[in-house]
Length: 74
Image (cartoon, rainbow, N blue to C red; front, top):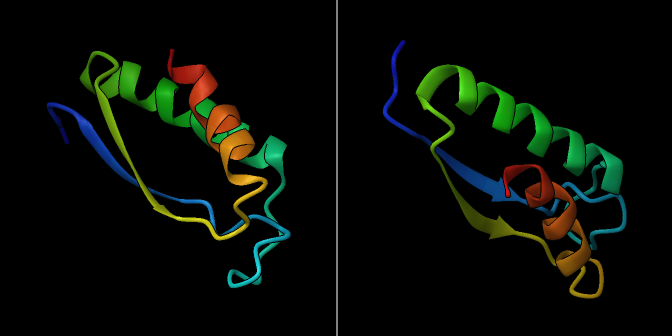
């Protein structure tokens, strides 16, 4: 497995308070996913990642969650 880059469909409807998701992922959980994704991208493809917003329906929390997730990629 030797990708040129990782393409991620980043769904934030897994957020614990999302009205449609029904899952229990915390803000720290999204940050952890971002951290692991970055580490994998560094190891596999020189850190190249494209991350696309896929879902997330708690519009008050969404900006905070995206920042937590992406903070490890900057």
